[in-house]
Length: 227
Ligand SMILES: O=C[C@H](O)[C@H](O)[C@H](O)COP(=O)(O)O
Image 1 (cartoon, rainbow, N blue to C red):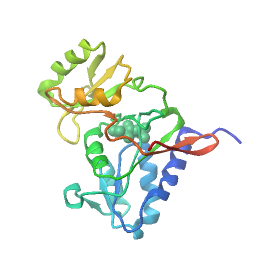
Image 2 (cartoon, helix red, strand yellow; image 1 turned 90 degrees about the horizontal axis):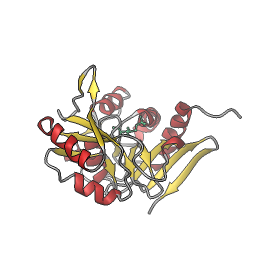
Image 3 (tube, rainbow, N blue to C red; image 1 turned 45 degrees about the vertical axis):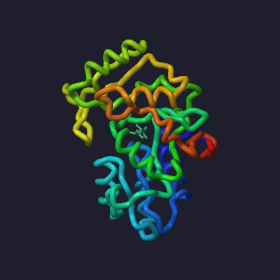
């Protein structure tokens, strides 16, 4: 059998995630190219769920285009499950997220879910988080201050650009991407950076970690459980 492409692996885990959607319950939906595969698959279940809570404008548009109702998180409260991708995931279910700039809303929806199911191709599984540039959502007036704080930790932080100007998130903020950090204690790191003035959310998901990861491998979908 030929090795599957990354896109095929994403399709595989997007479809496998349907097994975790609870009929009759609203599902939390993340953001990104892997989640887009899940959203496509979810359309086949749309008559069996009331709808979704979405973590981005992009996912909301995709869900609605497929006829899946999208609810405001404030109207819904606790969710049975949240399905989302990751930029990196380690052997404990801790993740780096935000490559698509949706980290803050993702963390909010994840915090409402009893179970976080991460869907990812095998390239995302790492021994230690930190090789992927760590996204941090920051209030625009604080970006240079946050860049200096990361430099003091030995990291190199840059404001993410889009079309030559700072990218603006769904929340009207900017993203700082940080390289050069090895995140050996993700729980402590997440708590610390989230307290820096001007930081909206750091893209370390340790307090909102995954309970399950559906990993797309050339041998099929591997299920990793973390709790
Ligand atoms: O902001 C985006 C999210 O955190 C995504 O879940 C993450 O970047 C993974 O995206 P993809 O499935 O496109 O690799």
